[in-house]
Image 1 (cartoon, each protein chain N blue to C red):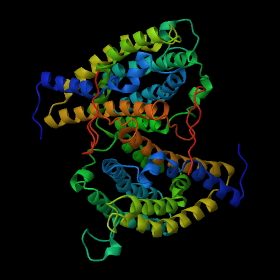
Image 2 (image 1 turned 135 degrees about the vertical axis):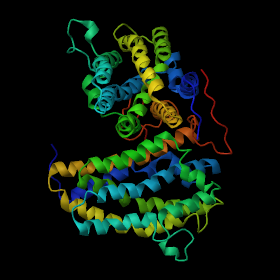
Image 3 (image 1 turned 45 degrees about the horizontal axis):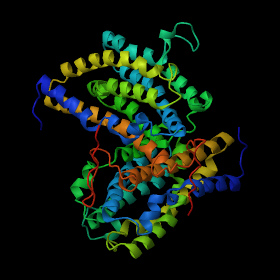
Image 4 (image 1 turned 45 degrees about the vertical axis):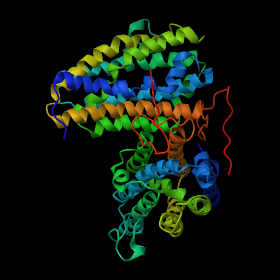
Length: 258
Length: 258
């Protein structure tokens, strides 16, 4: 059994998980940000990551459905609004456009058809499993663990800044429209994570609860990582696209023979 | 909307899914059966596949919990008994030893510690997501779809025969003990699938139900495939082992640096 950690030691232990296994370390992201990917590979990333984006509100609503405290629900609701938006597509007030619409601007800019992206038809099955594992986790674990799993936002601003700079430097598709999701998250994530971190530091009152929170955050880093493993396997090395998954125009489908 | 298929056309459509995307086509299996893997890679496969083996009874019990008909439950119960066994480890009646124990004889023969295998500590996260997706599927879909998802057993005897022959020809660890799981499945799977196939052919009474069954079987082939994608990515090419996952003695942990 682990000892109960001081607040500072507990916070450090949460940060150490990011240092060890946040997905900015993944070779796929290093290729993506460093200009090492072809357009079709970036399309595959954006298409698969869309399923994560549309599932985040399902995840947050699942968490909220388990909260007894209206004040807590109100604080958490902002996340859902950030993703779903406060307005329809094409409305005049740009600040009210949600994260999912902003992500579709990225897939637009990459030349993907919106109906195809929304259909989820070309997803890697492994993307679906990893994302669904997140939604299921917050349903099946304690509220404290569900909140702790969101703390990858501690590490997100750095990767968003790196991504914006890398895209602007390396890719012709980078512009205000395609980068709008990441720029907006630079404002939102620090606000969200301050709330979540305070909640976890305050409500993990036993050594066991602290360990549960650390495992929950590690679980979350694993599912982000697993999504990139699947993309890397299918679209980079060894470039084996599973039967039925998206095939970019600049690649040929993998033929599997007995 | 698809047309209603004759029994023969429906059966052919089910078989066509196996021809297109059953995991015998996956390069990892071709390496495994052809003698192309090192011991550590085979350990990684057996270790990860153990989670599938121990989860199959959870899947079958989830299906059974949804059956109204005791006769149907009795027929399905045999699957659980096949995996869990009718006796404790080390009992005299060898025929009563279950599939999970037989799988542990394989991991024994590969030099893996049983407690480590059972702990699930070294699993690839993607293995867990794919296997859990199967258990969740049979909980969340119709009983007909749950039964249809089991029909990969149509394609299993061929891969088991190929595996037994390939192991015997290529690997020193192949013997009666390590191969006992696969030999037993050669008897069990055809019996199971005959029941499941009859159930599906009889109970898919509309074109929509037939399409649901085809999607369920495709879903199942995808999750078998995704497990091999994850193994191939981590332990073959590009051989990037996710942080925290099993590292065979004959490999070094992957170092990830910012």
